[in-house]
Image 1 (cartoon, rainbow, N blue to C red):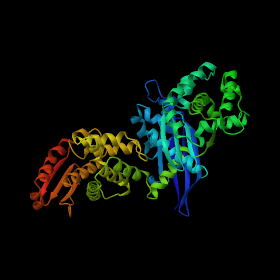
Image 2 (tube, rainbow, N blue to C red):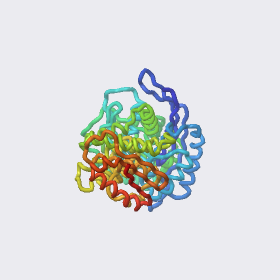
Image 3 (cartoon, helix red, strand yellow):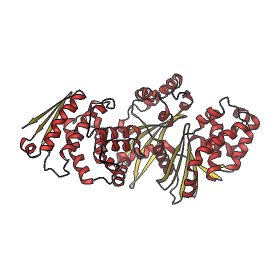
Image 4 (cartoon, rainbow, N blue to C red):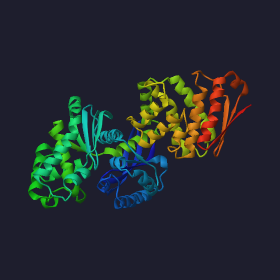
Length: 496
């Protein structure tokens, strides 16, 4: 393995692009950065009071994405992964903005959940640090959220994402750039209230080393060191000295700090307040800074997918175990659903590769709702798949999983406003047919049906003798005719 991969990190403060060369060194995958782009967008600052993004912010964001898209123009889609974080999660008009952003970039953008962001951050930091058996705490203060992770080596044990960041806090407490003792104290107390909810659990877990990742931590580390407030890293005493300097000066600009970059000036007070609260609530005395973070974690995750070590496969296996899935039944349904889908959507294979994977996972997980109740279990399955923390899966991945699970039985009309592509209907059809055939939970030597789809016309050809011996299956298949008619399809059942 020796190839280029690209990760795009659409944060609430900055947009970043990193291109890495993947090298397999004796069975160990290493990624060496070959190009980086970063632009300060301050997306979180563009959130209005009603949580919608303003036009000037989105216009600038699209300009940046077009520049990133030019750099990535020669990349195959499987070699690029773009992830979006907190502001994309909370913006109410993201449904309108996201398609424009994807068009500008030229690649799909995954809006990832907070804990998934935390997992990727820990992976990125761990890969950038020397190997160690020590348990590590990683704190990542972003523009709109802060992630807390405790783990060992490359495996996180605790992960949380809190809705507070350097942009949102600076905007809320220091909107005009004025820093005084009262507003700094208010900002710190607000952050402490957020952290207090998780502090006991984290202190109980414990750690031997604490690291800060991303812009706020690196900025604080550089300022404290170059200003002579700390001999190394981020310290409680150093931050107290920095606060005193800012309060006496009244603004970051007048404080004339060594080591500060221009793009950090307006968001430093909010980031400092959050970091001070982190130290107070988690009883930290010193924190080192680390490279890596989200974008590097995305690269390693992408490299794992390419090497058939997709984290999502691990998550599916864990969910099957957690929810006591009937593995034999899941395997039957999965095999038949995928065989039907391959027949119906054979070309181009790469265009539908991701949908094929999701269909396979949906077949394996479509019955997890049985762990709650048998009645309308498909709704329970869909709810779990959409809302649970599923490492490796983006929000879009989970929404599609939930859609397929919800559609594998019951009324189809409820899906009409959720399906966005014709191929999704075909995937739902394949999963429904497979679930119907294996309702008795018994192996079938060869599925007694053949399916063809042309536009909105579905034709299912069945073996007459087999159907005669299985009247319940025959009855259920015939009931499909009216269901598909309600969503604009003709469904014809032919016996041969």
